[in-house]
Image (tube, rainbow, N blue to C red; front, side, top):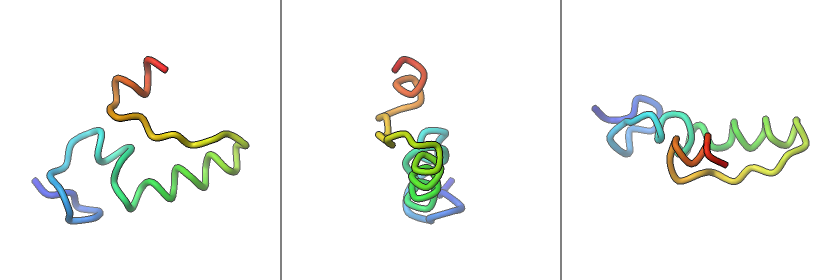
Length: 50
């Protein structure tokens, strides 16, 4: 199924939560607000391991 937010790629959990070009600006704004640097992990496993 194609991502409903960006209509660019097949949706998966990593794309929907981390890599979708519609979501990335949201994460960047949240991280700026929290005062932390945003570095997108390559996959959901990397997110929890770091």
